[in-house]
Amino acid sequence: MQNRLSRIFTVSICALGIFGASALQAQDPVTLDFYFLSDSVTGPYVEQIITDFETANPTIDINLLSYPNESYKTAIQVAIGADDAPDLLFNWPGEDTGRFVREGHLLDLAPYAEEFGWSDTVSPAALDAYTFDGALYGAPYSLEAKYYYYNTAIFEAQGLSVPTTFEELLGVCQALRAADITPMSFGNQERWEGVHYMSILNQRMAGEDTIAGDYTLTTPADALFTNPGYVAAFEKLLELQNAGCFADAVNSTTPDAAQAQFYTEQVAMYYQGTWIIGQLDANEFAGRYGMFRMPPITSDDAQGNQNYALLGPIGLQVSARSEHPDEAAAFLNYFIGQTAQQGLVGDLQRIPVRADAVSSDNASPQLIFVVEDLNETAGAVLWLDVILENRVSEAYLNGIQEVLAGTLTPEQAVAAIREQALAVQLERAS
Image 1: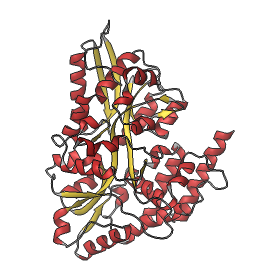
Image 2: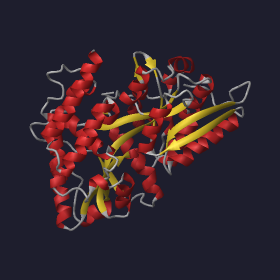
Image 3: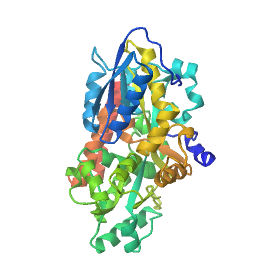
Image 4: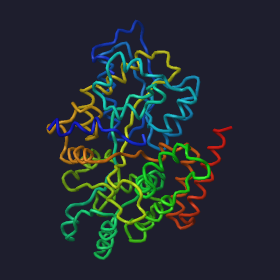
C-alpha cells in the first residue's frame, strides 16, 4: 500500500524540517501569535495540535487567531505588514506568497530545512511551491486537489456512468435535467469556486506553457493573454451553464450552501476540493458518493495536456518580524511531523505531504482513490487566483461572475483581464 501511494509525494508539480517532537528548551515563556484559515472541521484539529505542542513545550504558548476563507485573506494582508505582525501564518503558494516575499514579510526557512532534513520527509514538489530564488518561505502541510463529487445512488437510478470526456459531462447534465434533477451545485458568491473552474479550463484550452508565461506576466506585452484558449475557456464554462449543469443563482450562493445542497441530495454533483471529504463524512455522507476529475476536452482547439489536475499545497509561514524564529520553526516542524500528518489523514481525510502518513488504516477509500488517481496525472496546475498578481486576479474573479451573469461576453472579460495584466506588467518594468 505504501509503495503504491508514494509517487504523489515526489512527482513534480507544474506551474508551480524537522525539529524533534521533544520539548524545545526555551529559557523564558514565549507567546507566538498564529493566524490560521479555519472552519468547523479544521478548527478542532489545529487546536489539538496546539495543545499537544504546548504540552511538549510548556514554555511556549500559541495564540491562535482563526478566520474563515474570505475574512482571512483580508485579515492577513493587514496583519503581516503591521508592527505586531503574527509570528506564524497560513498561506497559499504562488503570488500569495510571492507578494509577501517581495515586501520582505517572510522568514527564509531554508536553514531550518537544511539543518533538520525537511527534504527527506516532505514532498519535494510541495517544498518547491514555496521556494523563491533558492529561499524557502513555507512549510507545506497538505496537498489539495479539485474533483467532481457525484451521488452514486442518483447516478445508478438514472443509469448514468462517470463521464470520460467534457462532452459526456454535458450529456450527463442534460440527462439529469430531463429527469427533473438539478445536476450540480455551484457557490460563487465568494468568487473562488468560479476561479477554480477557470483555473483548469484555462490549462485545458490555452495550455500549460501559455498560462505559465501569462500568469507570471513574463510573456511579451504584445502576446500577453492573447491566446484564444482564454476566451474558449470562458465559453466552456458557459457550455456547462447552458447545458443546465448548474443550480440557480450561482453568484449569490455561498460555498457552504452549495456543499449542503450536495450532501442533502438536492443535486447530483458538486465540483469542490478534496478538503471537503472529512466534512462530507461528518455529515453522514461517507460511502454515498464517488469522485472524478474534470474530464478531458476533446475539441480540436484544446491546447493543454488533458491529464493535468488542479492541485497544489497549502502551508505555514513565519514572519520576518518574529522575535522567536526558533520556537516558530519548532511549531512548524511539529505541524508537519509524522504524528500530526497522520492525524491530518485520520481526522480530516486530507492529503498529507508525507508519504509515511498514509495507510489503509487511517485513510478512507475516497482519500486512497484520490492519492492513487493523482499518481496517474501528467502534471498539475495551481488555482489561478493564487498564482496571479492580486489586481489581475481581481479582474478574473469579477469577470467570471459577470460572464455567468451575462453582463460580459467571454471576449470582453478576457480583454479586461489583459488590460489589467498589461498595466501591472508595465508597472513592474518601470
